[in-house]
Image (cartoon, rainbow, N blue to C red; front, side, top):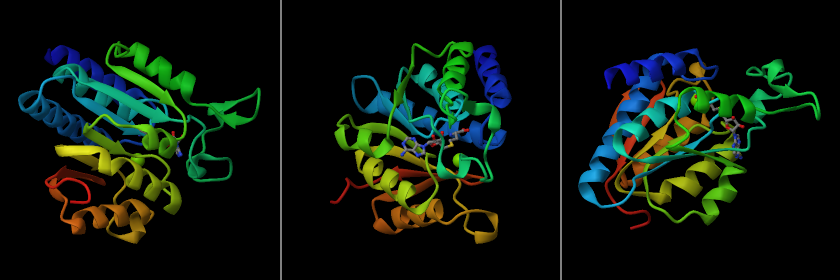
Length: 221
Ligand code: SAH
Ligand code: MG
């Protein structure tokens, strides 16, 4: 089993993306705790959701936790990149552009990553706009990872759409939370602050810019 985990971590490390190794392991460990707690708490398959997959780096860390705990990970992305991934922006990668239409297309890369990791049995790709998917979603989430668009509007839309769907006892992980504005953009930090001050969440873990919260009170209660 350790061999399998080493294999998955090595693959995740070599996959392109925006998840430092240490934070990826912390992400895996948090999802694993969520899956194990869910197994003990209720029958059925624990549901994990990831918002923002890019080429599958964080997906492999989360898929490893899903595999270990009998969960299913739904990985949501329209695969055309965020604002900050478009040409002229900081996180653009020209070889992800589809020559047919000149747009970023990370889906083929993501699929290859998941196939290479042999995680297709536990990872389901959901290709589309995250708030649209959230608006139709009803299954309670044991684990939700928010790492989609980092601008004001997309980050808040993800938080407002997905955080209420996390089950009591389930975990919400937010990436790129930077208390010091010199380190990065504000929105992920601001929505993390909102969650902490809402009284619905307890701080569960932190690693680098990754913050993990546990739902202690139902949404809006
Ligand atoms: N978690 C990834 C990085 C994600 S980058 C890693 O570990 O490397 C952010 C991703 O969010 C991009 O792939 C972008 O396509 C996606 N995204 C941005 N806005 C979105 C939206 N409204 N709906 C779905 N996906 C979105
Ligand atoms: Mg990120």
